Image 1 (cartoon, rainbow, N blue to C red):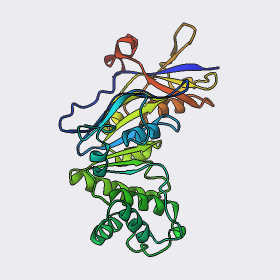
Image 2 (image 1 turned 135 degrees about the vertical axis):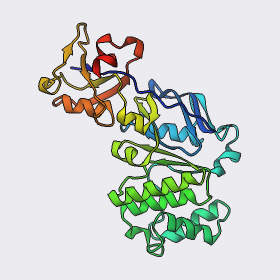
Image 3 (image 1 turned 120 degrees about the vertical axis):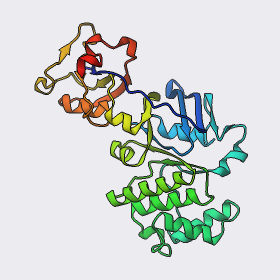
Image 4 (image 1 turned 30 degrees about the vertical axis):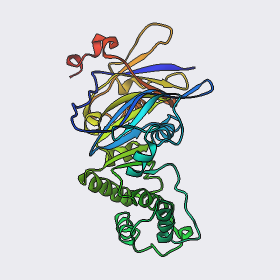
Length: 318
């Protein structure tokens, strides 16, 4: 049985932004047969952002990234990077973009440094000083001569990031870059991302981990089932309020002691409204998980402000 949970109140409003848009999707759609992997996605990423693209596995994150890099064609809509359509100006734009999509393809029998040299040769050559610099950036200088088969998963991820940085790109697109990193490695990755943005670069990171996005990113877009849920700053997401419908797998068993103001509305779906305070976890999904027993969350979608019940107005929940 599937039921809906509404978590209220208020809205999560994105901060007014100014500056150059370096990555934009316009009504982006990717359809495989009857399945919509990406559904009318509109994003704007600004220069200097560390932009988190957050969603559960299968939400459409990697498909969006592949379209952004021109690896697959959209069913409809478009992607612009640095004010140019990616499909029409691929040869001009992609050399200015560094990317790591899913697991990096590495030669396990070669050293880390020689892996970078191999990639550099395909790119038309990169000076040894640049290879030295990226190895230092990702913390692999000491292990650069060791064979990659001796690297941990986190070290392989960092080597993949080094490959993406070889051409000193203006835009860096990373798909799950913290995969396999320990807490110290995530801190190093965060510091690296901030150094890059201080140089005027823009970083686009996809992830399914709330803590990773919270620690690394400055702005975030949440995607679920191919559709955009919200786009805002991490700060506002942590402190804001919003009303969402959370779809769970089984019938609800809500712990009333955790929500004294619980009310069940009428209708076929029998939605349950729950207050979400500013001190709640990063996402309504996490807040709902604390209130719903044995009911894994399947979907998350925002409720338009004009449809929000007046009982959950900002003033009534202050």
